[in-house]
Length: 288
Image (cartoon, rainbow, N blue to C red):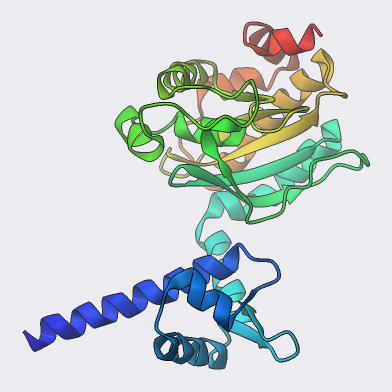
């Protein structure tokens, strides 16, 4: 009985530490002690003890002047281990830069976390008008090309468990309204080898994404190009898709993938990419 109680207390403490990290991770200005009490609902003595240990070990930082807590350098250092332990993320930077050099539009690398996508890396274009996509940013997976290309490579039961089965939150008039409509699109994405974001997450923003296969042939990361609709045209979009497909295959090759998706190999040809885009919902946007 004593061991069970002790284990339960340890698990409760671990939950509190993780809740603390998650609360601070979404607050750029940090949080004060009273704000953390209100946010987490912890006893003052318990929170004070957790904060003291985490600050002393540099997992959190405390600003004496503002009296606010922020994420510390140790969490940043440990977070970099993700890139080191996932070779497709580690190898992607040069390939992303090649895509930007070819089309001069911003490129993102991402993974899934539950129902959300997480931006792992961004290489920005030189245009003054561009979407600022911070590393670590979370986004609704079903409303972005990057998120959907990753959802498309999960079993349907898992996708349903992640996003639900009913109505979906609407970000724009073009967001998929129900899970069933989304599942139909995920099937089309698997067939054609790429996904689109036709102003589904942000008005005026169009994206195209491809999957990246790891050494085991699994898709856990994806890569996308983001284009403001004011610059969108058929030539730019087809070159973006062809460049993404080429970059994805390069990354997979570098990390030892034994097989390459046939769709991606065909999409490396800009002419084929153009025909595939014209057969998709992109045609409506290109005709504007």
